[in-house]
Image 1 (cartoon, helix red, strand yellow):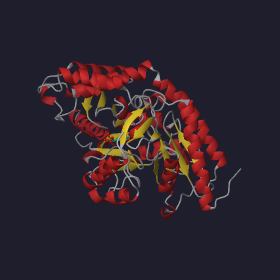
Image 2 (cartoon, protein in one colour; image 1 turned 135 degrees about the vertical axis):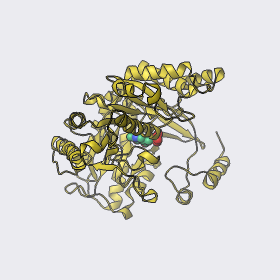
Image 3 (tube, rainbow, N blue to C red; image 1 turned 90 degrees about the vertical axis):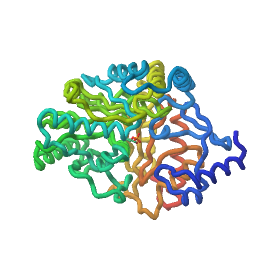
Length: 460
Ligand SMILES: Cc1ncc(COP(=O)(O)O)c(C=O)c1O
């Protein structure tokens, strides 16, 4: 364990040299950040001063198998000792085996696997394939991409202007690229289309996609992209009508359906892939995070055979390459990670313990005047905090809800992502019921404390 003075030296160096994701170093310095993590096991991590924390968000909702899986490190080491890379135009055994494994797990004819290094790259690849496919089938006018407001598909150039919302400001990078169209998000709690039930919201939001296609002209639309359950909206689960309707609308107008499974994939929602909750097979599926539980950078774009066929001939090759994509060491790690998920039935555990988590969180909604909504699926959940349950009004920015909740939760040993008025949870899938009790108790007490400070009366 590093001594406190060593930790301070590391912290100072990080504030001087490191550009951390979505953070500014002035505020971090004021708050005594960042924590320096030294080890982890299951859903818990330890910092350099010896304190243990529950990582309620499992890294970036990504450490699906949990921390401390030395078998994954072992598999990566073994492969690295054989060869860390391969010459251009060749491949390696783990890379081939990973592609075959992903194809085996993916539904329908999603069998052609383009390996990349992260979720943004997977979605970039999906959009490029969709546009190139439309050209190859003789429809070069189809370049527009429909995404949903409040969705997130990554930070790189091509996907930056898909989705969008206050959680991911992007004014610095405008103008928006041509051909970006936006549809409503089927969030039943705050339905943009005025739906008052999940079902009504789902139907209206799906219908809005069809309207958008017709308004713009079907022959201009290449693809629709969406996450089965979207994270910036706080794990908002759409009504059951939504995805089957979207599938049908895409088919009707020759629009490809890109399913962003970067968060939902590999067991997060209690099934291997989020789309399996609604029995739909997308045309292209992006996977990342859980494929390797963030042990190393690997991700993939998985394409239906019928679409991939258009790229199978010499003069039809897709011009697309990333130096480190399809890396043998990352592939070996991913294979071991998937083996662990299968052997330990972590998908089933995510469904069962995730249901328990939601049930316990729902109890908080009854007790706490500021818990407006509890939602989620499997090990993917969120609390929507409101100042008024009737009107579903959030808090004023000066109330600094997210920061105050984060501080209170930290006091109780929880690392949890609180953004805007939302608490996001995506723990490792090896979570137990006892872990859930620890988490929910800490949230409960923190909420009481916050409500007390704000002078908000209890409802029970
Ligand atoms: C649904 C979704 N898509 C894409 C991405 C981007 O993935 P990455 O950060 O690996 O580029 C994320 C990241 O959080 C995500 O949640």
